[in-house]
Length: 124
Image (cartoon, rainbow, N blue to C red; front, side):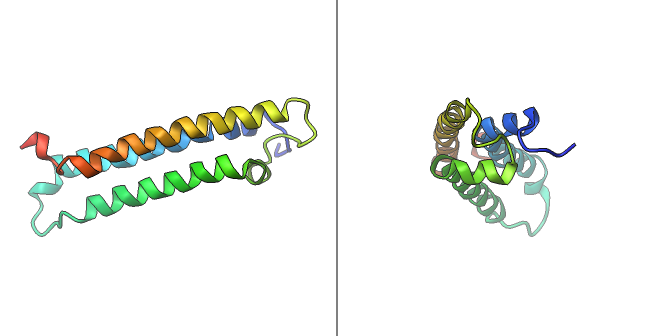
């Protein structure tokens, strides 16, 4: 059943920020840990692959979160989360925007490690 206003779609809409933040966290720290565990032992593996992947994930997560904050109706339409005439639509949109803003700060904070810490520096 693929109808507008389902509970699952509304929850995904409301949790857009934490979902994007979790995916960013997974890509940044998962790729870093994998590279530190295996990648340094591989010959010819450049040290530029991981930073490019991590910065790409950071930019993508920031764009998704900013899009959710600035254009919530477009995200709602894309997900077909809830009818725009719903009595609680303003509340749902505000919750999503607040969670997306908090998640944007989380993404920015996690990306500070990319700036200040060397790759695998703590494991050497």
